[in-house]
Structure formats: C-alpha cells, structure tokens
Amino acid sequence: MYALSDFQDINIWREGKFEFGSDKTAIEILVGDKVLLDYLNGKESFKHVIAALKEAENSWIIKADKYRIYEKKLYRLNFNI
Image 1 (cartoon, one colour):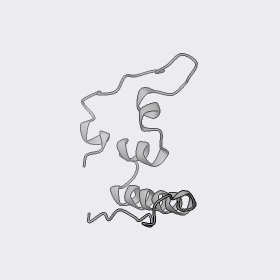
Image 2: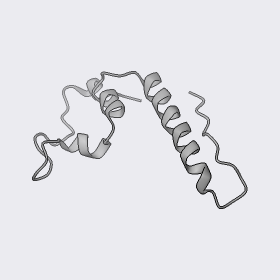
Image 3: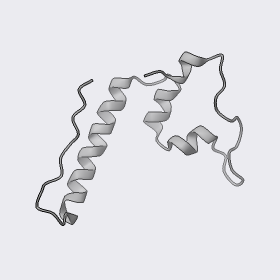
Image 4: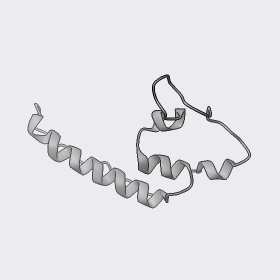
C-alpha cells in the first residue's frame, strides 16, 4: 500500500472545500475516518491502521451479535499481513 506522501508531486485530490456549508476537503469527506486519513497523509503506519480496524470490527461484532437472526456467530476477518 502507498501513502499520499509517496506521491507528493501528484495532486489527486480536489483542493479546498468540497461541499457548500462544509469546511472539509473531498478526501476528508470520502475517507471519513481520522486514522485512515492520517495513513493516507503519511502520518500513520499501516500496522496502526490494521490494529484500529480490528478494534472497530470487534466492537461491531459485540454490538451486532444481539441482532443476529441466524445461528452462526459473527466472526472476525483474518488479516494475514
């Protein structure tokens, strides 16, 4: 995977405000997550992103489990990275 900092000479994102009434840029709105945004801007490691995704996934599994309609339990995806 590459970070945006790997492409410093190439501007692939629209600059400035993305939508009327919002101070956020296009990339901030499209990504929507601080950890992922920091990774894309070269401020965070891929290892930290995976750890944050696993934590969020575990939290979702715990919350969503009580709404299951099938017998099979929810489970984590396995990242072999």
